[in-house]
Length: 252
Image (cartoon, rainbow, N blue to C red; front, side):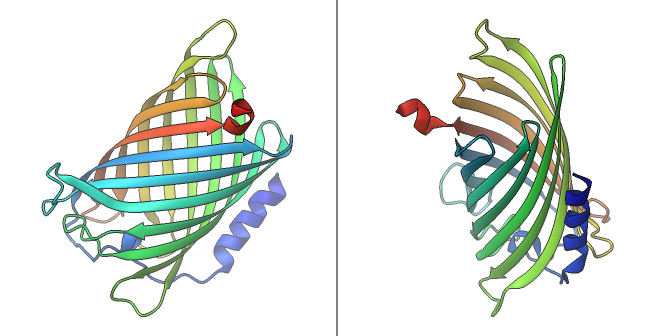
């Protein structure tokens, strides 16, 4: 495990990094506050006791004063993500993923149309104590982003660190259904001052496991972009997660 963390940090600091606007947003020295809705669909399928695969779809919708939907919000980005997971033991997980992001213009976020490809490596460790589950996660991301005015992709690299706590509130007698609270604090680290801490996300939510195969979570996220600058950019987001575990086995 120590070797994996050493590998993670060595790969992070061995690649060059260039200035790259997150989410293809234009520079905004006075920051902004955005109200968003994030919806996530995850399909996790075990291949064996040691290996699993996962596929995610994420749609981020954001407030836009120029919105034509009549709802005041419209799609800001669409993400497709494929995972491969390896479990050296039941409480540890080593993963690799590849993302494809499509960004849509949003005047209020100062975001232009763009595309991003984002491979990543991730390590996750779980500890359990009574009704609590503690999760530590480290993700190393390699980002290639291009907006509609750029002739080539800009590259940047960041490390994401997240402690997460889940507290079980109720579990039925056969442990098929449960209700739980979840909270986490995720820190995004870059390489260039003053953007070494490029983003911070704090989240609180409630989850409901309908059975062994289906889980629904709803939560609130407060996201701060460039929190060390004088004018950080703030996001208040409602997040809805729908996860299916080994749904194929259940359908068979």
